[in-house]
Length: 156
Image (cartoon, rainbow, N blue to C red; front, side, top):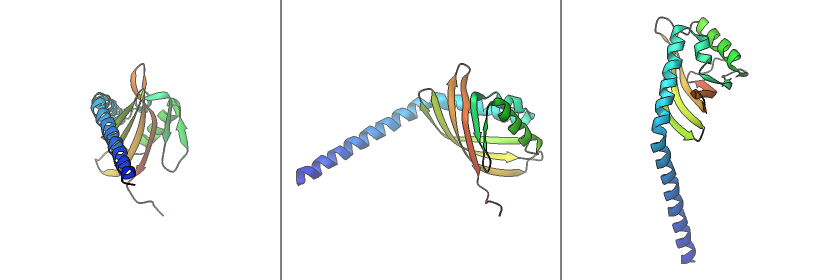
């Protein structure tokens, strides 16, 4: 019976070591991708501030999708451009993106972050969180799946 407990303890220790080693490697390897994601997010925020829906859409992969809250999935650059241009035209004039974590997975990466949106007078209209799946392409890292939700309570 004691041997069984010892074997179990050894397995747990080995598993813990393997998991912590994997996390450590992921953390070390994602510093470059984190910088690339930050640069792409800067382009996103700059295009948003210019009111440039086409510039935002160009940051998405050809097969990109927006998984918007309370709405259908929006697929493809043309539809993504229309969505973001409509958002800008509705009075949202600036967006701040803050990356919390980035994990690299071969030719994909996931980003978890926080967002804040502002009107033209700098008033905060919404805050929330997002997850983006990034896809590595010929032109670098592109947004491939983009999902977000608000921190504000639902209206009801």
